Length: 279
Image 1: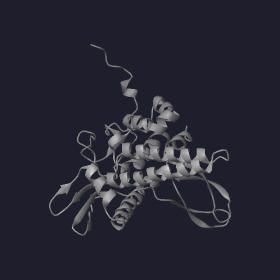
Image 2: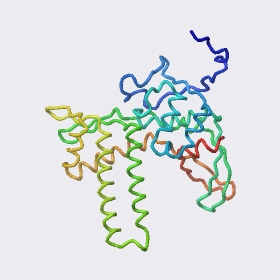
Image 3: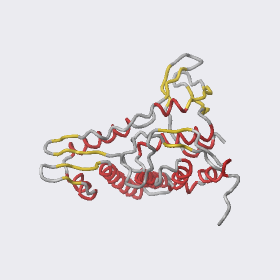
Image 4: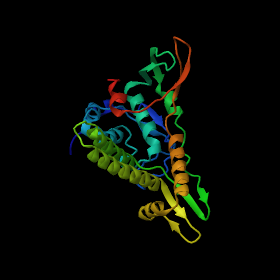
């Protein structure tokens, strides 16, 4: 029987604990080990984790984020299925645990273009991530729609599809490409993006209740969205967009040190720069 490692007492320990914006809802059974107090321990990254998030292919296909979350927040057993509402909060918590709560940014005033260096408190950023509000249904006629956040796997797959179409369109932005080929690619990309929008809305609907049935099958919901009238689809799409925006990180309120202009600075999580700037 192998002996216990005498160095184990010096292994990394949790630095902070966080509450998930989802409250632990929307996780399939067995994919989340929720502590009794509802707060998940967050460990700092290891050297292997830092190498992982620096790998471009791993960042693109999502495996880097999944690997880092598994390492630093082991209570989330399968990050692929974690709801999108929790992604930002978990990544911010991992950065705080690994590099501290201060994050330096450079921002330019939109009024006078003056650039200034600021240090953001990521604890404040995380406090602004509101709990998800997917528990309210939407009634339209005889139909009752119940919503859910899409999973990280779905977010990643949808982002890849969108990126591929953007790349295809950029490849057409060349004087040597015939106009007919550009138009054909534009039509293809538009069809793909339209179907992606339908797919995203379908993925965000957990169930549709009719007077006679409760429909939860994604294929039936997708078929319904393909065949409902445009006004109903627009209402559902706008509702899903509103739910998504409500759970996103809010812009940071800043004041220009040069002219005093107050403005809102968007805060986005680009995995490569978000962690890379700290090391």
